[in-house]
Image (cartoon, rainbow, N blue to C red; front, side, top):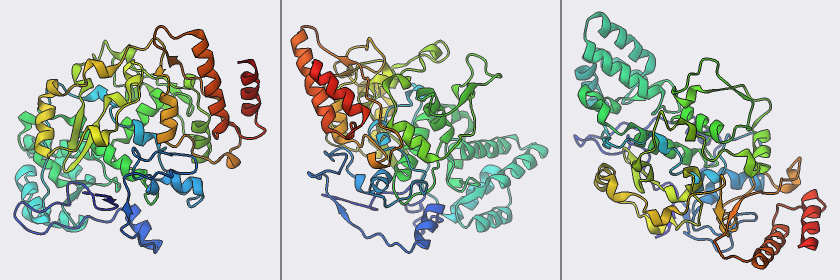
Length: 464
């Protein structure tokens, strides 16, 4: 059945109450308010699972990026969104976002997520877990207009419980404040959902929860929202996202090593970025001109003595946070594992979404749900190595450029991807393949008419 835009679940506060009472409506985010002000009413449009015609400059095959029509990159390309209006993400994120932050997955953690609660349930939870009065809980939830509390209020509750020696309640207030500031922040940056407090009822079990998997699932949901053209903000664990970007793309902005960093500390503390000069347009121009040697594919190799690589990093299945579930697909990002990247199967056909109870069971018994050795491919001899044909496939299912060529300040740099060839490939075959690839390069947007890229490619063709 074709997917309908807007038909998916929107977080853990949207379900029914455990008491059968209506749940408080989700407060409008800045993105929702912006849409309301623009007086733009989006119709419920059926999005076909495939679009044979594709888009002007990708993806030509939409079986992977099935919701690309609503992606900010599509609107940027067609000029429907101004160059600085949306802090959108690059569409590559939709292809290679899953499985990239495998460093933080626990081997022995369990996926445990709170259920949706209404405002009255939130009051009762605050009273029992944080030792506040019913009147205090009522006032706070009235101020936030829902099952939320302010981070500033939690700091006051923490101090009050410390003074009265209610140490367990103080610990719960501290932990709720911590997740509200780090792994589960919302777009307000000032409140946190009370439902997370359920995770801290028994403080002895806090360390057994798979926080990394939950943080990734929550961040994936926020990235999905941020890639839509009508979203203006990004929530989630953005510190992790920024650290990942700086480790893999060290030249995207000026960064320097923190003088306070000591080997073994969290990698988030290793680099100290400076405030970028310019705007988002300069970042898009850099991404359009990025070369293979500008990317560090395996930046965590030197960190293995402090955080070893565990088998759960090969977990192939779904991770979840609340009612939101997302696939964790190592075979889509094998270069980040130090293996040769092949053309992966479509996740829509290969990995259907299982029930939530099955997701939890699969993660708990992850040994039975690892990517098998045959699909991991050979170990790479060069960083970022991929098989012959992978780049061509990637360009058909993705959007290789952000900025249309007529608006680019500089022509794109030619790619320098190392291509893996099986033993026995003859030199003549390699020359023929190289000739075909250069001809294909000329037919793409990578070599604009009259550019140096076109001239150099024509010269290489004459010598091939």
